[in-house]
Image (cartoon, one colour):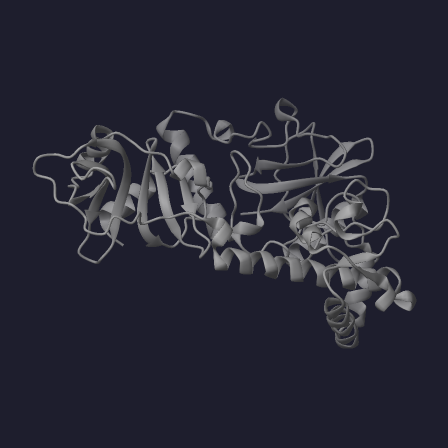
Length: 387
């Protein structure tokens, strides 16, 4: 990667990732810079399609490029008036490029024009074949997981009558599930996967045949695992790509532990640069250096939040019992999945030790396998270590 691009990425505050999973734009000091395809940065928030369509003044573009000792090689002319420009290009020896969309302005006297006036990043997610594939892949995965879930709930009654053919439009509502498994009930999300008679919706008869065969084969191969899904509350493997996550303001998606570590290091550097103490670096109000009365974690039942403690970043899942907290941590260590409040498994290895953290006293006990916050009043927090 060109060293200038590397420097730009270090100062980037957000990125745009296309449907092929490549970084195609970054935001740096308020300017959107389109780049040749690069591997995405795991610690940057995602730009929206509206944000990357922004146009900037030629002066603003030149200013930031000059600071990095870069020079505009050519301009994209306006389609209606070739004496005006709408984009600026920077070329690199390795074939890479930078591109900045410009507000239409008169071309400089010495301007060299790009012969191909096509924008290097045309965004049209509705017609993206890969985006459609990803939606289809997720829908198929959710249908299979719900079919297995239905078998786990009612093994003796599972079969063709478990399903009902419905208008395929219901598949468009799958993102509303947010990766969760819901039993048939009067829940407000009931209509996503079930009809009013409690039957699991599918788009066709062919899909019913395929799902029944899939479930039968899966049960033969691993009956214990399938039956264990009866207590599951989330869809295993739901989040596989960045596109599976909802876009939320200030959201950061970590695709690996390395990404978490990079984010942590970046926040610490930012804190030192801005003269902020470590405990105040995070945007989360629950960020703290220890479990002390000065910064009592959120003891709200079922609450889930981030916590910085003993130089480690954790996700804290509150729940109602020690056994539930142990169960949540046990699954986290085994699968890397947070099964949520109230989750309990029958058998937890008895030889595994517990480190309790009382919120009214500081502690540095780190010898236990299960790290649990003890709030009192039958509320506990399962510490799920991120780094």
